[in-house]
Image (cartoon, rainbow over all chains, first blue to last red; front, top):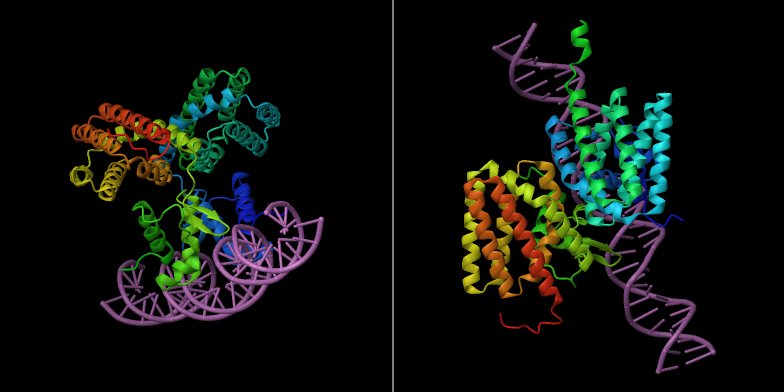
Length: 220
Length: 220
DNA sequence: TGATCTATAAAAGTATACTTTTAGATATGG
DNA sequence: CCATATCTAAAAGTATACTTTTATAGATCA
């Protein structure tokens, strides 16, 4: 079963933790600590952490690996990339009409609605990630898919920050619903258009959220 | 002076060799062999090779690291990416009007013309790479720049294959000249337009070249 | 002959040990 | 009391040694 190396397994495991939001901005990932917890030596853990760093998931500091700091400029740059790539990718995914991926998108959207009803932010986040993974998996152009996935960690982090706001969650839920409709129809043009709008709205929601002044300053 | 690690130095050195075309499709890069030649241990070399693999410069086989095989499909996918990203990137670079980068582009274009006059294919390749590096360095969006650089190794390889043909070299030389003119003017729209055309022509030239059965080289 | 099995050596992968760098603490001087 | 220098421990980085995997050559047999 274990057809791949420790390095790869550990890489995937840490990546899953990152995408699940289990690691916060203050946490420090240290190879020998993780290695001890996993019953392996430093080297495969170290190599997994280096790989995650090259992929943009982590930053290497002299005192452990940590989440990269998302400066407003960097966030803006990623939104520029998203607007360049994701509409085209969505069009290709819509053309592909992969039944399995469509089913995954439907399931994710249901989970999203349920989480929204319960006010379960963590579950909402997981569902949004599932939806994104599903449509990305349907993109037939592997190079394009890879380019998008390389910055997806940052997308998740931004979304995580934005989603603290209930209004932003509602915006995301509505956006994903219309996106799914476009994918269901297999209409490439509609999918591209919807995706462009979705990313645009996400950027606006994030900007609005980020512009909010820190409450404690006023409260005092 | 040696402010960075062995790993980073070795990574840069191997990368330079790859981009200079010193490693052929039959060569195999093996960590302990390279390490012996450099007077270091396997580990920093191994990590540099892994990093280059994650960046798309190499493929890891069970018998050493080698150039990735460029299937026609993969080449087509990279051209799709290029057409999505590089026109916008060129527009941003043109707006930036970086004098130093412009100077580098001029120097590269001169070297290119000289190499073309001498029929020196290797020098032509180096000059084309210099030009690309110069305008990419002028792109102010670091995320966009990074996304482009991640597939640049493949661009170089494709260009290397295409450039065996003198007609293709002439096409490239003309394309870079008009590109430089657009950059000089600082006209974002013109730069985007020229870049789109350049990538389109590169794809056409490659398709034409790849369609050739064997070096049954037809004059002109 | 040729197909399959087996032995082997090369390279990846992992473990352990040692060295260097550096953030933060503590000490020292103005 | 602040600024600067020094010390220290933690983590990155590197070296060496050991283990596992696998492509290939050679052996065995139909």
